[in-house]
Length: 560
Image (cartoon, rainbow, N blue to C red; front, side):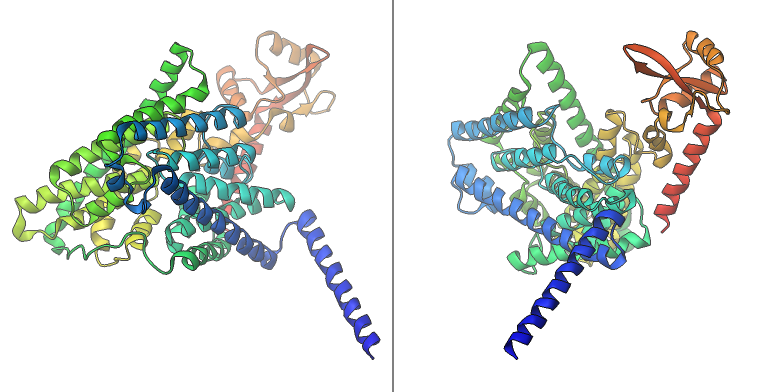
């Protein structure tokens, strides 16, 4: 009897093993089914959640060790008592390590962040760079631990993208599946970072995927909840910021003040973004003029940040303590204004110095300080019809962050989830809507999309602007010898006039030539044995058909 039971169990185990092998084979060769996809989304959410958790706890541990601070949530108060040379040495040394890492593991010395995840979703079937991404995460980890003035959400989002890209490559996921898995990973990472499941899911849809397809919603929510559970297992069900009650809105009478605050926050957000781009441009020029090695650039920036921290240690890291002071009204008007200016400059130096990190947390701090300053003025001018000044800090925090991210929906929700206060939604929504409406007209919709535009990656205008760049002329051309293709002699005549295109070129390069030359086709060239040879012809009508098919496929994905 015992032998029979063992034989039965062995047979069952073998059947289960064979079933698992079949599932793996199906996943690798056919892609996941709906249920399987949700299971993969859950696993990716758990992995991304743990990655975000370890990143956050690692930063806190290294900060505590480097600065010797007993509580890193109150690091700037502790840092005020440190000698100046300690602050400068820590920041410069951290920058040097960052520079060496990026110089060794990235081809351009640039940290990967949210903009690269958006690019991966739009142009690379939901994939991001692996080696460069891991190096960027390590660089950002050191930056945030040694005095860099940035946030942790950028590297965490890209780390999540690396996880989903690895899974997509392992299961041979197509573009739609790869993008959805990327959205799952991003949602989980944001949720785990800020204990904000609703905002995490919407951030992935609004910022990364940039559509709200119904089929993508369920797995992204599953992953977002998984990331939140990871956070709460460690930190409990607590909000990021513990606040006193911000006060009641004096309703209709006070709404015009929040409209004005939104406009001011939109301008502050634009100043912050342009300051970063200006710092990056100036840094590149100085680096080229002085012939500095690129690994030294972050070290110089770190030394500058250390010098600022001697007088204003509030700039170190994500600025949690200063943000709480602003949201609880613990700062004077002059302090709020000065800290806003100093923090903006510090963020510009950090990002322009290629040190790494994100812009969301600094934007929260800058927004809270801006709102507090505005609120102190507004409540003193009209004290009888005003709520508390902390109410304006609360709204300003969301308004600046939303304008920088270009994500009014998810930012509004993440501010609520960070503070746990849902009573003043009207004030936050009014300020956020005005700030994003203004800022989106002064930059390319958001900080991330403007970054991509500066690299000639046109994602801001939507798929119609970047789909042409995904289609190669060689894939659409009619090969030489085809009965529908022009003769070699006719193609050679156009080539002699300079009207031709390489097979590796995209339709984005071909379409302006068609418009300018008004010809029905262009010869397609390829290097053969060291010489350029005509291998086919790209017809204008074929290019338009390919573009139309790509648009239709994108529309179908966004409306699934």
